[in-house]
Image (tube, rainbow, N blue to C red; front, top):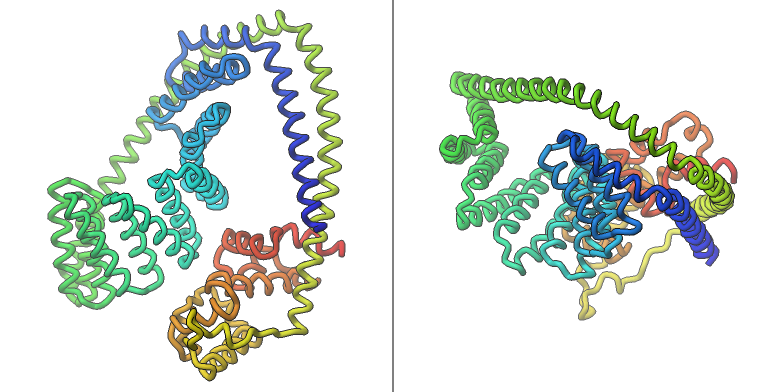
Amino acid sequence: MNQNRRKKACLTGRQALIIIIFMVTYTASFAQNSNTADSLKNLLKTANKNEKAKLLNELAKAYLPNFPQKAKKNAMLALQLAKKQNNRKEEALEYYQKSLKIIEEFKDKKGIAYSFINIGVVYKKLNNYDDALEYYQKSLKILEEIKDKKGIAYSLNNIGNIYKELSNYEDALEYYQKSLKIKEEIKDKRGIAYSLNNIGDTYKELNNYEDALEYYQKSLKIKEEIKNKRGIAYSLNNIGELYNKLGKFNKALLYFGKSLEIAESLNTKDIIIDSYELYSESYSAMGNYKKAFEYYKQYTALKDSVFSLKTHKQISDMKNKYETEKKDKQIQTLKYENNIKTIKIKHHKKTHIIYITVLILTCAAIAIILIQYRKKNTAYKFLVSKNLDLLSKEKELKIFKGKNFFRDKNGQSIVSDDEKEKILGKLENMFDTDKIFTQHDLTINKLSKKLSTNRNYLSWVIKNEFGKNYSDFINEYRVKEAMFLLSDSIKNRILSIEAIGEEAGFKTRSSFYLAFKKYAGITPSKFKDNINGL
């Protein structure tokens, strides 16, 4: 109950802060709207391509309070222009966010959802997986509200991609399977093939080559039905690579040959490069080093030529862009300076009033922020104390659920009592005594082998005994171990948060933070900051 009150208090504070910031922004912009829009329109007449996108966004911002339709039109023009110019990732993110702001004014749910997807895509390209995941999940929530099945499938697949990047393969498979089911419902064959391929990739990462092969072959079959030649070539290489890993080299060579034939007919150099490399690996594994060397030479020669062409083009483009921007900026700088001087003279008196208003509102905002900051710190301390309490109690008590958890819907036992006790006894010893969960690569397959049982029994026991899937089960142990390490005054001082995450069994910083916050309700850094004050 106290926690809910704290959350409500934080929420109320945030809402108040948002209102104050909006009032400040609106007060400042209303006074200068008309003249700013006129100045920007004049600049647009003579602006170069690089400046136009920025000016259109500024014009949209100026129109927003009084002319929302004009604002939306200019924001969309800016976005289209940015895409045509192939701007840098950071610039693309800026334009998407500005476009999103305009769309939100019109409460266009579908537009908002797809803007979230676009922002998530950019964050993924920047390797910022936490923010990418957040925007994909926001998009999914809206798309589910408006029942846009195609969009839902796309968002589920995007979330699966993030979990795969974070090496959280169990969750990745779960989201890929959900996406596949919807694509099959709407009969999106291209999408089905893509999802099947993603599932195959994930099984390959888990070294489950038999399942990976099954899904790659299903994907290939659909690509052949829809005559997607590039996709066929790509799938043939994937299948061949798996046969390589399974030691079936002659079979692998057949698939590489088919892939190379299609890729050469399409002149798709990336797939040709992959085929040469895979050919080289196969012949090398077979002991035919002469053939392996021949294909390796072709692989390196083509790869180097493609890289040289790209590099040369990039250097040439950068040089031309630099020279053009240098001249344009000199002209634009003079124009901007003249316009700024004119605006400053006309609005000096109005600006003075605005500054006083802003100052008053800012002081009020700072006061609210300070109050909320104190409340938030109190809430953090409460969460840390509560989690430490739970850890202490878990040390004293080991509560196992009764036999009913090992019965199906008809009351029949799925796993015998002896088998159950055997699995649980070994599991408890390995997790509580040996702390096997701290191994980074401990998959459910590896654990089931160590327990001398099969994957299905172990998965079923964990699900029914502890009420969670394998990924959540092992992550909970790792988070608890991390909390023990963070509460240890010596290790807290010596080890960094990342080192503690690794020692607890997490492979990446991102997966550590996601799991810790999910279980403890607070980030590891906040936990560490607040534990000393208890």
